[in-house]
Every structure is written in structure tokens, then in C-alpha cells.
Length: 144
Image (cartoon, rainbow, N blue to C red; front, side, top):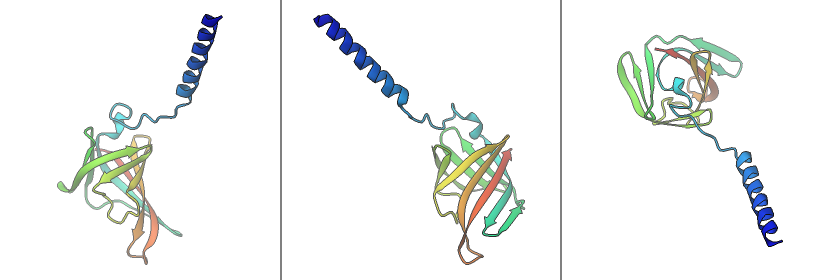
């Protein structure tokens, strides 16, 4: 009788542990191993500013390169000159750049997504030319 209670208790504990571990929603996170396509060299191809009713797309007049390096660092350059470098951290679909690479951003987080082989970074920024209105800015980068 005592051994059957021990066996039953062990089964109940095992089932509870299984249910707990199966219900866990731990995020593996973005790493060079889980998302190797992110960690490469990118060239800015377009910027789209959505400010209220207006929507403007620009092609940059200079060559802007963003390197996302497997050691969780980045380097941003314009026409071959480094303008910023630092570290990155990922949280889900967000990248946090330290120091921030978008000077007018309202938040440190930059949303990233892939559109085919392109990297799309989206951030909310203040439009200093338009009375401080907030704008959604979408930047599309192509592999360099």
C-alpha cells in the first residue's frame, strides 16, 4: 500500500513538472545562431516618413552602412566614415542600440523585420521641421 502511494505521488509530481515545462513561454531570443541573417552588413536603400497625413519616401544621397556584428556590436558609417558604434541588445522583434543611432527617436527600441532579404527598421521619431510632430520612420536596408 505504501509503495503504491509513493508511485502515485511520483506520477503526480512528474505530470505537474511536465505541464509546467510544456507551458513555459521562455523566449529563446535572437542570437547569431537563431537568426544568422540579421548579423551582417546592411546598406540603407530607402527611408519612408509617415507623419500624419503625409507620407514621404527618400533615397539617401550618401552611402549609409549598418554593420550588425555577431558579438552584439554595431558600426554605422556614412560615405566610409564611422559616425557611431556601440552595442546592441535584442528583445523579441526589437533592437536596442547603445548609443541610439536615430537621434530624433522617441524610444530606444527599434522594431526590426525582414521583407524578403531586406532588413526593415521602424522607429517613432520627432519631426523637428514640423512642430515636433511624431512620425513613424521605416528604413529599408539591403545586404551590402
